[in-house]
Structure formats: C-alpha cells, structure tokens
Amino acid sequence: MQPSYLPLNAKNVSSTIREYLIAAFYQVLYYKGVYPKESFTTVNSFNLSCFVSRHPGVVAYLEKLVDNCTGKIHSGEINTFLLVLYQESTEDVIERYVFDFSEFLALADGDQEREIRLFKDFTWETLYMQIRASLFTLITELKKDQEKVPVPLNFTVMLEAVRTLRMIDEPAWILCSSEEKDSKPSSTLEDPATKVIPLKEICTGPVRILSCVERVIRG
Image (cartoon, rainbow, N blue to C red; front, side, top):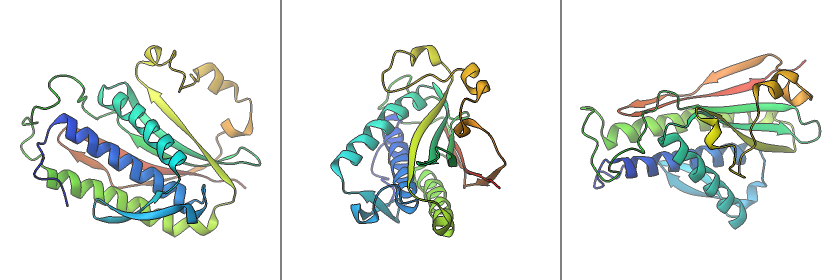
C-alpha cells in the first residue's frame, strides 16, 4: 500500500523513486539471468511480487549505484539512465533499459521536509498507481522474452548528464565524449536496428519518468 501516512515531500518522493529503480533493476537482472536465479528471493514492492538479490555484495553495489544516481536525478544533473545488457563473449549490446528523466522537475532545492502542494492532483495514491503500472509492464515484458536471451550476460550503467563537468572527477563514472562515440572502436558501440518497446510512463506532479526497452536486432 502507498504510505499515505507519510508527508508528500521531496525527501519521501525521492525515497520512493529510489525503491522503484532498485525494483526495476532487480527484475531485469533476475529475468535475464545475469545472476543465478537461486540467489534471489521475493518481496512485495508496490503491491507486486518482485525479486531481490540475497547476495550482500550485489545488494550493496546496486543500492550504492542507485543512491548515487537518484541524487543526480533530483538535482537535475541527469537526463537519462540506461541499464545496458551485453553478451560477455562478444561484448555485443543485447538490450538497453532506458529511464528518461529529462522532464523530471528537480527536487533537490529547498526544504526537503516541506510538503509538495503546487500540484493539485499529486497524491501518494496516484504516484504509487503509476509506478506500479510501470513496473508491471516491465515485468510483463521480461517474462514474455526471457527464453530468447543468450547467456551469459553482463550489464553496465550509462548516464546522459546535463552537467558533465561536475561528474568528471567522480571515480564511479567514466566520461564518454561525443568523439569517443563517433569513433565506434568496437562492435559494442555499433548501432544496428533497434526495436523500441515503450513501458508505462509515470507522469504526476513533479515526477516525470518515461521508460522503454531498446532491443537490438542483429541478422
């Protein structure tokens, strides 16, 4: 159930977006077989049965990654967040899970404890319903296609940043310049045909998240 007893403020909304991203990432890692399925267990997230890792190292890594990114999302530094799956043996990109925050209104400024009152129809119920719908469409798509994915797969995370200069000195990230992208030094960066599968958007109050699956088609 949505936490209607909590103040609808920037701090709590940010925490909810964090939970959504972690849940979405875990579902991709589980259904695509990035980690052994026996290393996962199930929990209730947004009134959906979701998989989460039981491995402490994976949990710590993923939570640190999402914490690092959500701070940048809420400060308006990040436009797009991509979870990229690639085949280990060839380094060919298989799929990209895209979360577009370009229309997300920055929540990092001002009092984080103050209730958000600028949006008449922005409620916990609406936010939770839309997040649940987005997560449900992701899980449905993952279940539909899981038998077709080659193994083993690995993943990386890419960000499209608005203010890259602030992130250059952060050891967690490597800057990919436009020159590097244009040079296409390996098959991983080549851009064959791509099938785009839109997921349910989240659009309420200051929270605007468009998401999709980009599936690379080869042959």
